Image (cartoon, rainbow, N blue to C red; front, side, top):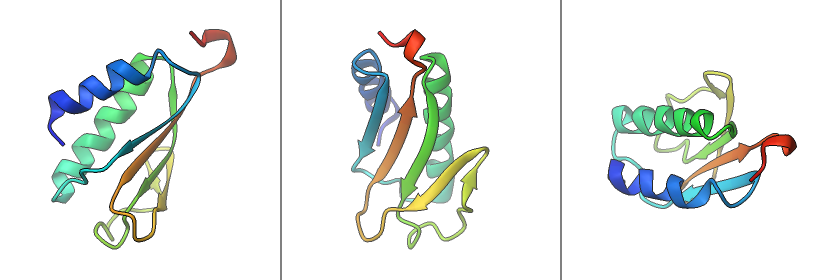
Length: 95
């Protein structure tokens, strides 16, 4: 997924709710692109006061991924070729 497009998704979704699941249907082709996308998701969550609490990805395609990315749990999404990012905002900061 192109960086600009990913940024647009964040800009549109973060103001909506305090708990958010963002699904990306264009999974990166390589490990380096995946790591960049995960890092960007963590930063954007931090910037919007919404903690990234879980990541789901196709482990079959990315077997190198551990059960955590930094402090965020990583789970297998099974056969679905998608990435899912789960964000939570504290109730006092919800828009």
